Image (tube, rainbow, N blue to C red; front, side):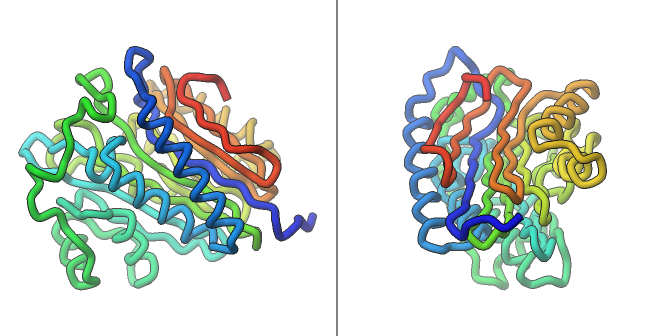
Length: 295
């Protein structure tokens, strides 16, 4: 089925670790501005890939989420960052894992994808690659990273989160980007689902997916690609596929959520945790920002 060149869809998330006792008005305002910016980008003809990377970079820079500036140091006092990107039509992908103090890990992931010699780089190798590409690092971590309270993560019960974006552009291309600082006070070298293509991020010509939650369970469920597989092989709708994937995550003992856009511009953003910071817009729907409201 051919769709109009004006068909577009966009979803962003700021993590599934939301707590009903926290005031998220600052995050809501940021998400509202972010989704409006993304809409303008897609309407101007910007690609899905460019749009999702730009929005995730803005979230990394804000300090309002558990990614980039809002990340927490690991048990050794070092901020290790994970990110990934994937472009649907080519299935090109790039990721960085356990990369210390990158200013924009999602941009490093994008550069890994564009370089094309590998899909993932980790630790010191990711840092060396990023420096060779001229990417920026945080020079004064103590001054740059914000207190956890700023983004509503006051204690261990709220100690995880991720940011991500998925989009369908006017040419029908799908893309996904995801970034995180990981769980608070994690073991040095711990890597969750965010940089693992097929677990935390996926995009093909059927659907683009970005996940958030307890990463170990999303890895075990192969969550992001599982959504696509249910649609491609099982004939499931987007909503059926995303619900079934989250049910599998829950069955394994995990919680969280995901956002997804399919090739027809349909949107899903379910979660099975207390809440998930998220926003969406499309050519058929006005901008919407939600945290605790059902999908």
